[in-house]
Length: 409
Image 1: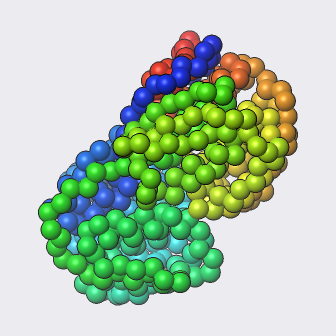
Image 2: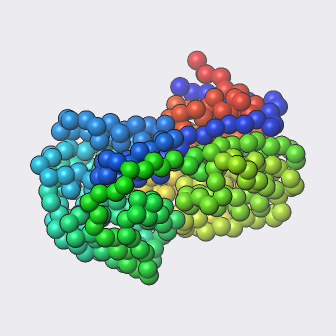
Image 3: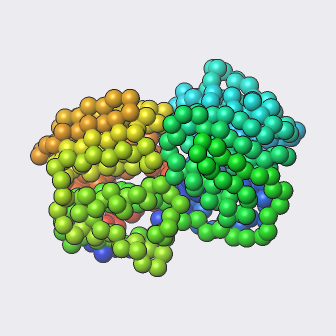
């Protein structure tokens, strides 16, 4: 499905409810398998979460998780601990080209039995669940935090708990802390000091319900919309809280640079465009929140300001090579942009080409990040249905705020 987007008038003052955080939901679903007395409310309605739920509930010896990288990593660790269970984990063509060797090696060090079905170092995987008795493992700290979180989530179910040594520079710390805080909510003894994460074993937890906060990555597109709108424009979103576990909540501070203020009310945030952006060049290290890089780059382009974004090395192995995808699509719109293996550099420009077709590369964030540009010029989004990976109601919500979408026949 290809869509033509056009925004004749931004509709200010609307209130929108966004489903639960994919990151929190997927972590809690793994923990719920280990501790069935845990109840979860406001789960994400994303494809990724649906794939994870299906894989956990299916009695089949094979699970197809599509493009869901989080599901692949968390399930690899989970099924490795399930004695007597043999599971083949497979996914899309892109998933079969996303490396998983670092996690597999760490699990093998703990005693796991995991075999590569096709290509060494990549899914599909054949996992034979067994009791893991080793209690110490090392893993590079600058890899995807999902590898580290996968180990943390299974740690309390291991007979002797787990000590994880993070080697070298550590990136995506907020996501590690999110996993840590969720363990704490279940009263599991866990700490993260220096380069060491220690998690104690725990066989049972008391009955409890955790309500998942709405997804901050999803709200980034509304920050972009307000930043690209007229002064006085606003939108209210729920359900959010000021003391969020999600690393992307740094959006509140980042978008102050683009004139957007965030007002926290009871379970909601009000985004308001209060002034013009305050700089001609925006610089930010996004090592702790790489998933919002696409949104920020498009915002800066739409505002006509330069930006230098760093800490983006993990974007090379996402649903697509997001740095190259951004370079390609922004260039089509008239941008002067260059990328390295870990950074993006955009020069200021005052003109945006109209009616450009934006390729999405099977990447939900490419589709959503470029949508706000419809406030500036008509734009076309190819394979727009890809948004369901994380945000099923995205195009409906765009319509609510005045970004109309029409299917291209």
